Length: 386
Image 1 (spheres, rainbow, N blue to C red):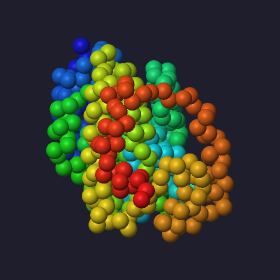
Image 2 (image 1 turned 90 degrees about the vertical axis):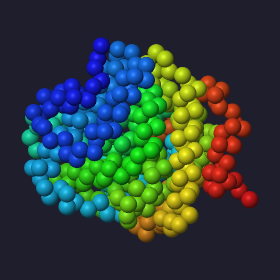
Image 3 (image 1 turned 180 degrees about the horizontal axis):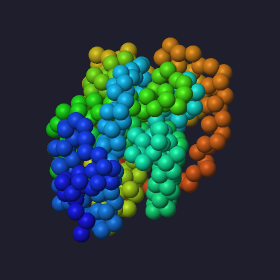
């Protein structure tokens, strides 16, 4: 049986790279808690255990490579992430569409999937080693699609497209990302009771590494556009680490979003276990997202000027109007070049090219009345019109 123990996994990462420095030691406790929960509670089949071990080894390999890059180039720590635009919102609120539209602007920096999956050069590569990392990412995306083609209907996968920085955050193991793959209730409880600041501090460090590499490639861009629903519950930490950030919060009725996201998580978990309870998946993520929206509402009471609200219906009806309003909120110019690039992206990535995502509320133990009640404060604050 595939082992999910800390020491053998750390050693495998060292052996693969020939490196020994994992950086800041704060990752060790969450790593140990995560692996113990996977081992005792995950109900993983043989392939699932092997897959999760490989995922964790890969994250540690990336830490080793990143620390080696920092050691070779200490100026990376001097990189400044200035005035990032951060898109947050419940999953399935159009945030991916908005993120990738804005990322089409040549004046904007964004994190491609391959950059987040392999944030540092391979030790065997010369220079930045982009070709090797891109090839590895393309192969991984192809394998994911082959193993679970239904995922494409729920979320567009593309090694070259902008994606979520939660993939960087996960390298600290202070992240909810693993909950999408495995049922790990004891880890979830432990994580919820802990200060997540070390995770956000390591996210900042990896973004500095990404920005430094972009400068080495000659990429322009003054500001980042970032995006992940994870930040909803941690606005205080986001602004502690990125004090000059501005946030676009996307909104849509949770009756539409929560079951859709539960379906996505259920599909992912089935790739690693034969015992996935859809009701438990629905219960976990509904509760997590409800707590996140409540925390965000509370934070916003004293920080409204940092936020711009965008409803899903307005975004879908007129994406360019939404972008214009966001650029105005940020007090940034929207160039003709950016407009043309965004329009081209919209044509090339039309939603109807992907298969339809099928699910029902009942699959996950939901009712419209129940979700409406759970998100009553959120709906009254952002969705219900007087």
